[in-house]
Image (cartoon, rainbow, N blue to C red; front, top):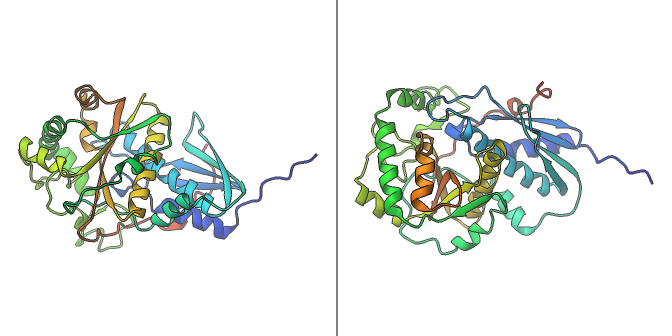
Length: 326
């Protein structure tokens, strides 16, 4: 019996996938990805030309970002009533390929997360004092066997280490120059129609943990005060058993799924990865907190008290690659 080939993606479907990917979170809002559509298949291409030598010297956050984009791509394909499988090439710039074919209507949970894609923001502010009472349900969204999402048991240890990292990055002139380059100032690149970078308005004047990205002016609370701030928040550490390219992608997928689930439930969130790039920091943190692997990202979520500003995005035409990379 001859099997018919899967139906190709129509232009309107391709546009839907591209819009979903364009709204994924990324390190410094660098959007380090491209899409290449081949009939019913979509390659998510890692843009290795996007480099952040001070913040992300090994490209780990770039792969986490691609993992978040992959989660959006998978959800959008399901929203289009496509059944999907995903493959992960071992070599080259293609981070993952989503293979699609006509399928059934998506599950309600997937549809709710898909509709949350456009509402998700990085919320770098203090949350309302109301506690998150459905953390267990958020943790259930991870669904990646290689990724462990855990709430840190000792915020005192985490506060001590985050405080140290904050002071290091605040005094690092080269890091600060790089962050300044990727800041979309209202009087600079943002005013001139920037399509990437972190909007200045999204930084605020908050200390850790709300700050996320440390600037020269970021307040550094003492360890006791920072521990109190951490204890008032809902924190999840995403860990992987190894430190491979695939592990970084899986961590990004799992993180984005939880973030979208939180958004669908009316919560807001942001991610801390900056401290994890200090030499030996992750290993030391894993040992002191008894984590089930290497930490790849720290997610904070809670009830927002105000709206977070949107970030600029690349035009969809730039997102769609004209051909597969060699």
